Length: 412
Image (tube, rainbow, N blue to C red; front, side, top):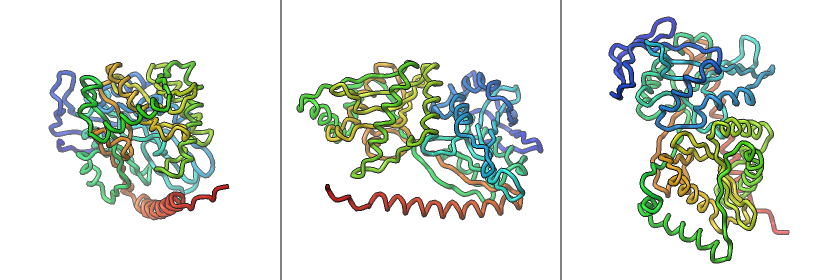
């Protein structure tokens, strides 16, 4: 990381900031300036080209994700008011090197005592699974430094900054900020696909190979044939989503396994994800995988195909078919489809559980940090926020334990 200085306008100047990648299309970062964009539509073409250079491509980094998030989830009422803050990071030639889609939230929406929290888009860890700046991997440290310079230069406009998507090598950049606190971390698991399904399967562990054998044989033994299908056309998306909502809710209702919440229980997140999949489908980026037995869809998983990378999103299945390990069958069939479709990276999404780790994936850990504004007001609001966050965490843990170990209802 090069030495840098900040000017009053938030511009970051590097003493010697050569990009880490020596490829011809990477310019020398002689200067990075951060500006607040007023129009997402105007920035969209550059943003889309920039996102294609990301090492791990995510639906949450797409302009259409931010567009739908703003349309469905931005709030405007007396108790709370949200405002989109779209930051663009450019080099000395004016080329876009980073985008930070953010939201400024005021609680309440008026009055001197309102708190002002600036955070990455997606104040919903169960829907926007990974947040953070959008940029090429070789530019990440410089882009983050430039953004921190902008935040410091405009500290009077916010009290608390929630900065997400920080990887291990970038943690020290945020730790230099006085009062910075790490909040949470999550690991994103992905598989690099090369060769064939047969060679890939041969390199997996013995337990996984045995699980694959059992899930296929159990269906065959009981006389059940399955059909694997992929939904991608815009006119097919609505019906496939309704099937997903039903199976996702059925999976969430199970109490004798790992507890998963019904993320799409209410109308608002359903409408949001419906709009996201319609936006993705017209760009040929939506994929919904289904496993059908006896004419009934028994397992499904939402996914996004971004270039040669497939991001695996939420899933659901019918509890009546749980004994056949149908989600393992669905994932195995999806991986075989990925090989046939020349997918190079299969992202299993964040969340550590054996259904992912037994495939021997690589993990990328993302951390979220809470930074106070340098102002007195910011430090006071930060202390209040951290106190409330700690209390909320304790309550959430108590609710989880109460649900997890709730006595079973007597049989009727």
